[in-house]
Length: 242
Image (cartoon, rainbow, N blue to C red):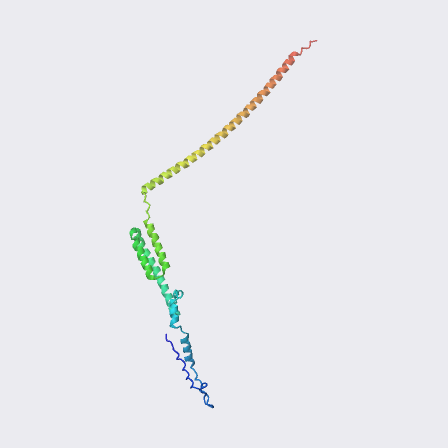
């Protein structure tokens, strides 16, 4: 940055002793006209004067609030180039991650101890692409979760024969329960039918007994009436024959 120093104005000559003031110009002679200033030179001078001084720059550097700001000046061509580079980097990263997972997943399943190595390679590759702390944190958390899951004790695999025997025993028990329930329902049905038949039989016997008693009563009544009639007939004397 260039600083234009404006020379100070020429000092006025002191008045001669005894003089009342500056010596006036001779009468009849006009003072010289001021020379015209070049507009370009004037604009350059104004631009130089508008620039901050070293004191302003030092004060700005000492200001803690202003030092926290970051100014990034880019042209349109630079921004477009950066966007294309970012897209290419994202595409390359995703392809690399896909190939990495496809290649390393069978290896980790066969040998879980290599999980730490795979996570270290994945973290290092992510940092090389410089996607920022957010992506790196997500990768770190995913690797930590996988490592923690790998440390958990795995359930013991049961013998297939034992599993089949347990399934067969469970099926047998279930079958027995179903058969017992069916037998209970059949027994209840038979008992209900027997009870209904017994009630019908008792009702029929009661009706038959009631009918027999009615018939007996009618017969007895008829016998009593016939006996009474016979007794009455015997009690009447016979008329003499003329």
